[in-house]
Image (cartoon, rainbow, N blue to C red; front, side, top):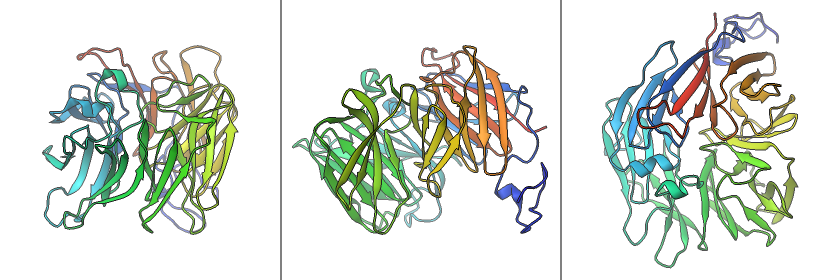
Length: 411
């Protein structure tokens, strides 16, 4: 039902529209402002309660408000700075831990030796898992492999990562935030490079060069299939045809069905880039090539967007959606409920037009900065009533502004 701009309640059903569309006022396309965080960053910020949280390469976890002129506030210092090279998670733990190790909003980090949780309430850090030296966590360790698709996946109940045992096999490992509940290692894949894990709706996926796996934690059902011999998964964003946004994983996970578990893996086949669709129950695999300039990106909750020429396809959010517009090649798209957010085509280098489209509304926002491109743009966020685009400046020094944001707010 169409409603006037800024309406608080739906005139058809009476629902509070703020719960459906957080952008309640009009946003002027050219009225952007800039925010930034000092330091060097390799991964995108994570959002919660109207704030952004980012971990710098020297282990500083900072909080930034989207308000005009806001300055970043240091929350904690992580001793093991290689955690900044890996995918982190931000979850809300609501009384699940009977021993009281962590509670409330926590920022989870991972490196080869441990998983830590930083409380966003008091900044205290807690080690949740410590790996045995003979079975390290599969994680990026240094500058040389920082672009690898590694890290952890988590929700408010458990976190998942991959261990490598002495034989070189890769074990999907789940540890529960309820310390009375034992951990699980439901899947083992053959050795080699690893991408993952990623999670959407309690479906956890990861892959090696030869195999792909999915674990449905809800039903405790594991699936493993061999990959086609002519398909090579992407283990770093090295394809010119298909860009993987910084901080994203090369997976798109379809919503769980009782009789069907389906994932898509970004990779190369026949000399071109695309997505390999895998239907585990039916043991079916089909490769879908994509044109040059496509991109794959994922939200922190695992919802993924494939941007191809003139459309954005969304996986993992209330069924797949397709939004059609002429896109800026290589730039990522994101699902920021209820909007599909993408970069529309422009005719000037460094100029950007961000389109937010929902079933009842379309908003175009503009800004200029040539440091925002397909290799640096890492997120589009709705922060309360505000909209923010985040991008990295990996060449910034420790005192440089390594994380930048273009921001818009309703009038």
